[in-house]
Image (cartoon, rainbow, N blue to C red):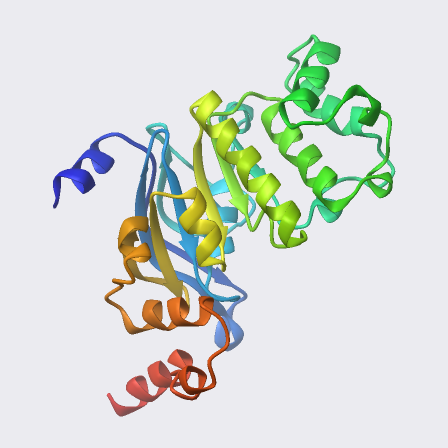
Length: 280
């Protein structure tokens, strides 16, 4: 183990070992996550990258307690996670979802959206916390009594981030937090998340299919395909174009834009794996 990896393992804020997630039963069961393991150090930004259906969001949802029936071992801040999460867990860990409109109640004002977690956890000083949370994400007091449909996509995602921050967590799980936004707004939200991380010393796990987003936000990343991690690497290695696994190389090529010659040479790794299994 290298010095950097050893340090990450010894000071891990998040540890995932041999995680399996299966949906359904019998012959129609889908083994969505297969033996996934990684470590995230306190204060680190760690990326999970892969195509749709690779299992990356399922890993995040299992960590957040939104998936039942998982097997393996997960720890956060040294505490082993069970099938159910206690209230203290949600003060430590919060999640920001891909679709800000879908994750915000359409009939609740911003004030109610932000006040509910304060009330649930009996924190008190709701007015002060709401004002601070809105200010922290760049929204003024005039947004307090608006409904989600009165906000732009970027503003809705800022409210979702404010809701996650209002409990003062140490960890944010970010599930494609900018993929539903226009490109110009994506940059604003990513810069906001980077600033909040610096100011609060937060630990991030960022799920994305976009290698540029991960390179902007993270220091290390794991590449997932068909429920497994095929490669773990640093962002410096990614920027040098030095992945080892052919699937990662293919993702990197695809991220650079459409190239007919490159596309014709792409491998369907699902078919390749099925063929390998059939030959054994």
